[in-house]
Image (cartoon, rainbow, N blue to C red; front, side, top):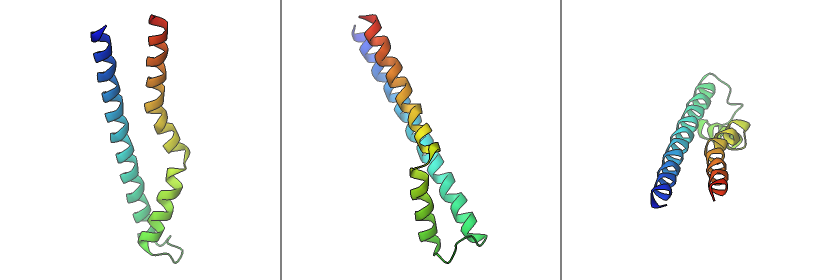
Length: 87
C-alpha cells in the first residue's frame, strides 16, 4: 500500500512540474510575442508595459490557458478514478 501511495505522490509531483514548466514557457512566449507586436507598432498609443500587461491579462482568460490547466487536472481525475476502482 505504501508503494502505491509513493508512486501516486511521485506521479503528482511530475505532473505538477510539467504543468509549471509549460505554464512558464507559454507565459514567456506570449510576453515576447506581445513585446514584438508593440515594437512593430501595434501599441495603439499604449506604453510597452501597459500593452504587455493588457495582453497578458487576456492570455490568462484564454482558452489556451484553460487547456493547459487540463494538463494538470486530467491526470488527477484519472488517478482518483483508478484509486476508487482499485478499492
